[in-house]
Structure formats: structure tokens, C-alpha cells
Length: 313
Image 1: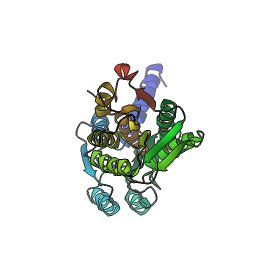
Image 2: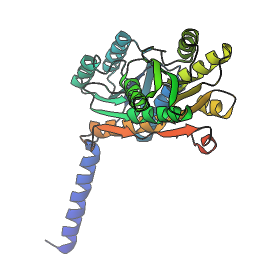
Image 3: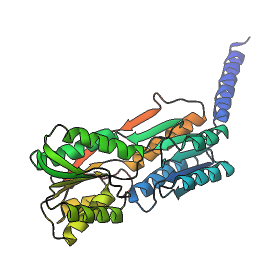
Image 4: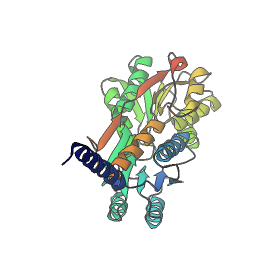
């Protein structure tokens, strides 16, 4: 074979291989997202982060984000709707990490990639979440030190999703190392909301004449907790939480009893979830199916340097 002909043949072959490889990539046409509550800025940011990444992959990709409102039956119906709409990928913030499995299996049987975001979901192809045990440890270690390792505290619980369970687990492990700390309550569901935090705190303050600290499982609850303390004129209570949302930045800079929040990054988490999901769609398995993102402690002392979530501000 003539040298030029050989070069041309090799070039053509390489071109064909590249074209067939590109053609093998499945296009990302639609994503369905079901989260706890779109009334919470954290979940809004997850939806926006996922949309931004999907639009990078395909500007015409359709994104549908809905609130489960922590209702399992509602989430089942939402997943059924995503299956009927023939989405390519579902990002799921599961109401219950175990009970969601039949819906996950149904979606996967329909050829849809399922990625759990923020909390685990049995049967999901991959999970992207904050290291929530670490987040609970950070928040409660700060609280324990603030009250010098002794006093009455409350763990203001929330919806029993894996993220909340892990945060409480991390918190309890820290308090267990401080024999001078007495946990007065750890099982009340404050609904993950500002109103829920306010209602729960009103109850605590009515029941407990002396309360030194509260660990709220997320920022909206912490804001509500602080409001209740203000209304009932109760002071000297150290409040910590998890999320690092913009509302908590304001709280840390103003006259509140909120002293710290452990930051997550929902924007980055959602972008990572879409990237992993798109790779899975195209037969590329992640190095690990459980991706834990680190958290950082934000306090009154360092909030000025805190950059916030990586989403556009």
C-alpha cells in the first residue's frame, strides 16, 4: 500500500472510531427531580444546580423539579410520572431511604438512571451527599465547647431521612463524650422548616426552665428556634445547625442566638449527581457509588470570609 494511502486509511479509521464513540453517547433529554420541599432554599439550589449542569450537557434538556413534601405516596406518584414522561435520569431526595426501593427499581427497569441526592435511596445507581455524620459532629462539638461541656441541651430532630439520621448520630456521639451535658429531648420532628423549628422550640421552652443549647438539624429550623426564643424572652442559648444557607449567614452576622452552621454545598452536590448520572447513562461507572462531600463549620468568627454555596449569588 502506498504510504499516503496508508495514512489516509488510518486517519479515516480513527475518524470513524471517534464518530461511533460520540454516536454511542446517549443524549440527555430530560431529568426528573423530586426533593423534600421547594420551600427550602437548599432544595431550590439543588434543582438549579442540576439544571445548570444538564444545560451544559444539552442546552435543550428538560428539567422537572417537584416537592414530595416528605410524603412517600406523593413521591411514588412523582416517580411514576417521571417514568411515564420517559426521562433519562431521576435525581431523588428520598422521603424514606428504604421504602423508596420499589419505586427506584421500577424506574431502573424502565431504563432510567437513578441518583440519590442529599440522602440515600435503596437501589439507586449512585448517591451524592454531604458527610452528614461529620456535619453533626462539627455542629455539636462547637456547641459542647461553647457551653464548656456541661448543661442542658436539645437535639431538635427532623424528617427521618438518612441525612437527618446521620447528623443526629454524629451529634449524639459528641455529646456522649461530654458527661456534663444532659440531652433533654432528641426525637421531636420539627419538619425541617422554620415554622416547625419555632413550634418545637416553644414547646421546649415551656417544658424546660433551663436550656443551654439546641442543635437543629437544618438552618430553617434554627431560624425558627431563634425566633421562638426571642418571643419567649429566653436568652443565653447556643443554637447550631447544618446547611450554611444565606439566611444563616445573616443570622450569624446579626443579633441572634444562632452561633454556628455546618455548611453543605447543594449546588455542587447536584452538579456532581448529574455528571455521575450522565456517565452511568453511557456505561461509565463512577469509582465509588457513594460520594461523600465534606462539610465546613461556619461561625460568627469566620462568617465574614465564608463564600457560601458555590451557586451564583
